[in-house]
Amino acid sequence: SQQGEEDPQALSIQEGENATMNCSYKTSINNLQWYRQNSGRGLVHLILIRSNEREKHSGRLRVTLDTSKKSSSLLITASRAADTASYFCATSERNRDDKIIFGKGTRLHILP
Amino acid sequence: DGGITQSPKYLFRKEGQNVTLSCEQNLNHDAMYWYRQDPGQGLRLIYYSQIVNDFQKGDIAEGYSVSREKKESFPLTVTSAQKNPTAFYLCASSIVRGGAQETQYFGPGTRLLVL
Image (cartoon, rainbow over all chains, first blue to last red; front, side, top):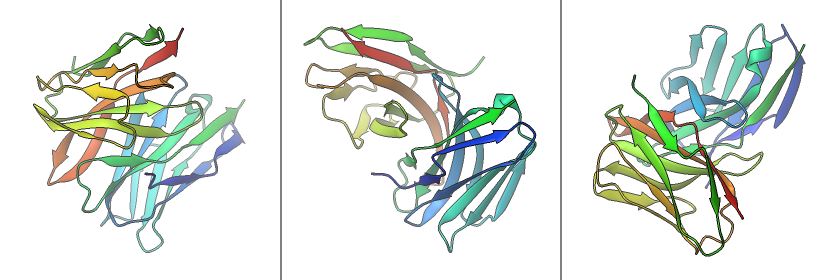
């Protein structure tokens, strides 16, 4: 079963530009999380936003959550080559407390 | 140095063979998970466990088995019944706060290849 769906599937931008990725989901959630995965590695947690929160910041990352539209966005400002990775959203569904469900991810490529 | 480890990094399986992937964590997390990732795809849940001696099937459990005899360890066996085992396998652990899933911490993964 898949809950989150990221958009776009792939994104290429110039270094220094901002990158925006979106995630849509289908059911009510407890929280939504964003993860990064470098090629051939495990996932690294970036940020968690709870259902009663609308925006969170962490360094160059900004996450928004719109529960009425069942969507979230991840903004990376002033992108760097090291930001090249796949980015996944994952949702903890309400009434399904035992697991989180990952989307298929957005592949971000930062061009030098 | 707390974390979650997986071994081996690469594993080769012969047809008809069972192989076991190791996952260990020293984060004192109650919950542990196994995911399968195919090229260019997201993560699909194989099995998960929220407490010692208990585990549940995920979305693609057929052909896999697990055990949770210790809090720190959650090994995954890929059995001969799994006909398409070539994939990247990721183990994760987390705390569960107030019934809701919190941050998951991932190991570095094991890449399984079929000979």
